[in-house]
Length: 181
Image 1 (cartoon, helix red, strand yellow):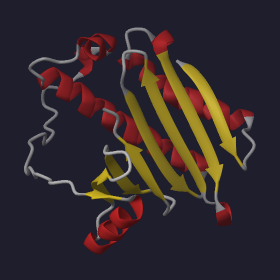
Image 2 (spheres, helix red, strand yellow):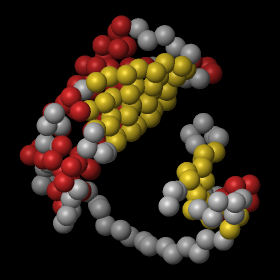
Image 3 (cartoon, one colour):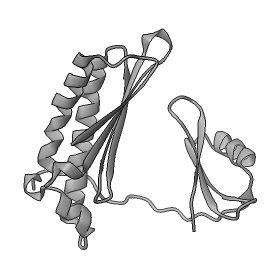
């Protein structure tokens, strides 16, 4: 696994780097070749010494695991991020094993023999919705999202004619995902 560190308003100590690499090396067992796996660790300090650690593990075969945790203690946040990532990996492997036609590149990159058959995850779709998208700008979409009390809103951008997703970020800002053709 190749590591990359991004630190915002905090110096990365050798102890922090060693802890990250030791704990994240657990994920090597999930991949057939750890050379094609990249891990980006982002550490940020917000006001009142609140530390945020975000870890993104991406494979050349095309999937990414990502988790972010905020805590006053860096090492407690790191442990919680590891737990979240392991949960995501178990869920991904279970879904791939149960899939009728799994994406071969992702399936082949993972060590599939570590999936527990007893791992009973609720993977059923319990609700489907149909949307009719009206053209609008981002400001109108934001107003509608706030009125509904949702954390995201899907709309048709009036200037580009493309589907966009407006979402609320953890830092209480907003983001827009622009869907290409």
